[in-house]
Image (tube, rainbow, N blue to C red; front, side):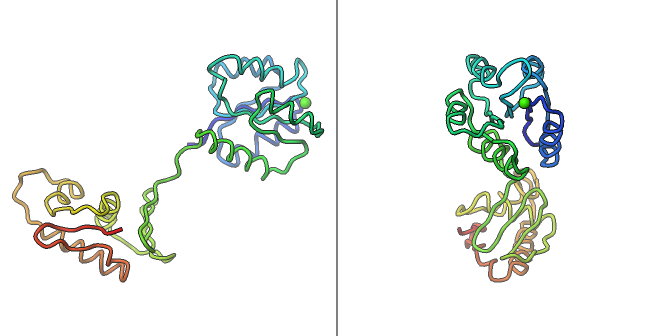
Length: 228
Ligand code: CA
C-alpha cells in the first residue's frame, strides 16, 4: 500500500499530469486547485505527502504552507513546493517557509517520482520494503515465496520454504526438532510425534540448495542451526 498524496495545482494540464504520474507509480492521489479546496481536502483525507504549487488563484502556496506548519498535525507533513520561478532566492524562501523539497516547472516525471519517493523514505513515511532475508548467496522473498541461490531460482516446496524462512529468522540459534515441529509444522506441544519429517525436510532443503545448504548445521542430540 503506497502513500496518499495531495496535489495542489491550479493548472489543469499540470495537475492531471502529476496525478497520472503518481497514480502510475502506485500512489493514492487527491487533488485541489485552490488553497481553499486544499484546506478542505486535507481535513477529510490525511495525506502522507503534499505537492504544493506556489501560484494559486486564491493565495500563495507558501502562505498556505506557513499556516499549516503552525498546526501540530501538519508540522511534519512532507511537502514539495512546485514553482515555475527558478530564482535561487525563491528556492531558499520555499525551504525556509517550511517546504522539504522544491521542484521547478517544467520537470521530468521521473524526477517527480524520485523526489516523492526520496522524501517519503527520508521522513519514514514510506512503507517498509517487502520482507526479504538472505545469507551468503541465498535469498528468500516472503511475498512471492521464492528462493534464490546467487540469481538462480531454487524451487522449494511450501514446507521447505517455511522451514528455511523460520531458520533464517532464528539464525545462529539451535532449534530442536520439537521446536521446529511446533513452529513450522504447527504441531502442538507435548504430542508424541515423529521428528523424522524434520530430518527429511532438512535433507531435501540441503540437496536443493547445493553448496549453499552448508549453512544448515546439524547439532548432534538437539536439532539444527542456521549459521550466518
Ligand atoms: Ca499555478
